[in-house]
Amino acid sequence: MKRAVYPGSFDPVTFGHLDVIRRASEMFDILIVSVLDNKAKTPLFSVEERVKILKDATWHLGSNVQVDSFSGLLINYAAENDIHVAVRGLRAITDFEYELQIAQTNRKLSLGKLDTVFLTTSLEYAYLSSSSVKEIASFGGDISQCVPDFVAKMIYEKYHI
Ligand code: ADP
Image (tube, rainbow, N blue to C red; front, side, top):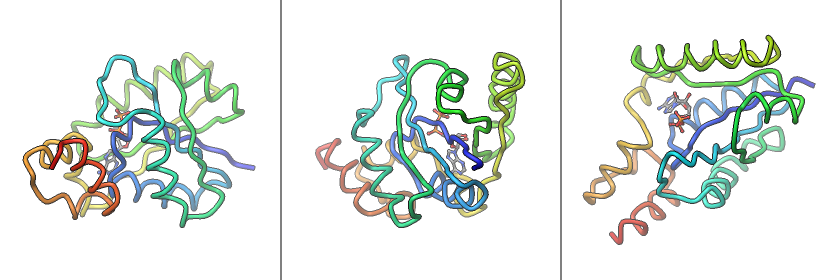
């Protein structure tokens, strides 16, 4: 069984993430989308909320997509779950330097046991990021092109809009 993890903040999940999830789920027997509990960031949604949103947004993809959360080092989480591949999305060249450094660090720290596979974004989602979605929504802007409707509603509620 080929298992992979797609780690990220997913605060909240966007159509860009969902595109990567769908495509990666066709490449692996099990894709575990795992929400990183990053103490360094103040998220809009709690880890529990993000997990629930991801479950609701991916249920139609079937049982080979699972949703989980983790804290600490990705390599430890991967080792505990017998996962040897991490999936990440690449939007623009600006993602590249950051992602390259993380991927190489993870490979080194895991003694070669965790490799990273990159999926390039579909062009229609290249501009999308969770932070821009939150910024647009906080000013009452239209985010219907960016996230599923139920997610948009939850974001507006957070901003009391
Ligand atoms: P992180 O805080 O770990 O960067 P994100 O939730 O912002 O978490 O992103 C998780 C992963 O999804 C990253 O690899 C990021 O590059 C990728 N990603 C984010 N937005 C998009 C998008 N619109 N298209 C493709 N990949 C994306």
